[in-house]
Image 1 (cartoon, rainbow, N blue to C red):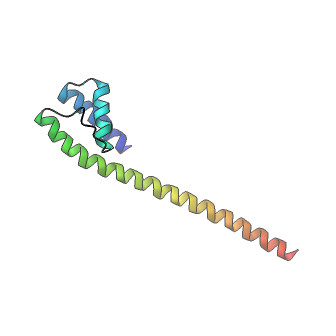
Image 2: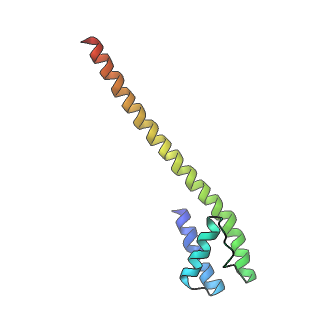
Amino acid sequence: MLLFLLYIIAIYAYHALEGWDWLKAAYFATTTLTTVGYGDVYPTTDASRLFTIFYIWGGIGVAFMTIYTAIDYYRGVTTDTLERYMARIRTRIRIRRRL
């Protein structure tokens, strides 16, 4: 949610600071946050350049935190699922050995 909020703030900031239309502002916010940076659109005012500096540092940090959290969650879900599956297999093996 924080990443999405930062993205929306950046779109609005570029729209306001540079006077870009919403699509161009979203395009630049996306290419900047993903570190692609094609260079075809770039900030021209000092205010938007300063905003971009903080957007890059903050955005990359939040993006990495989001990716890490998603991977950590997925790893936990996968581990829990695997442990339950293995417990069922062990139970079935014990039942068959008793028969």
